[in-house]
Image 1 (spheres, rainbow, N blue to C red):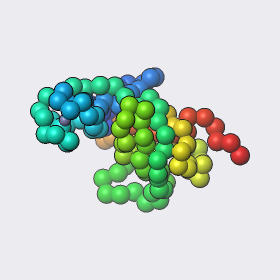
Image 2: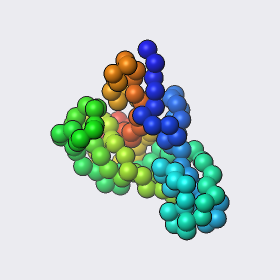
Image 3: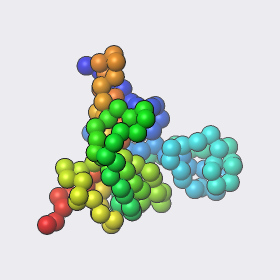
Length: 136
Ligand SMILES: [Zn+2]
């Protein structure tokens, strides 16, 4: 069966996925997802850079009912992850036990099937999950 990205231009393929961020050629600030104009200075020359193999969970919540248009499993985590490249990204969060999510947790990027579309394709999306097993 085929695998398709939930949207082109967001991330690179497994097994070593990265997020595709925009970096402004003017002020050098990075943003994700990438935009045609820099959100900081409105410059229109944006380069694409690969970021976010790992990060640190900044804050999160747990979503227990599917929002409109979301076809993936629930519950899932949702929150903000700080990347070592200097970005803070909004992201879905996954963990064997969502109760292990906590601020400061080292996380790593995963790209995996989120749901199967009407054509039978596995639709890939990104999320962050614990980089190591949680200590008890
Ligand atoms: Zn800029």
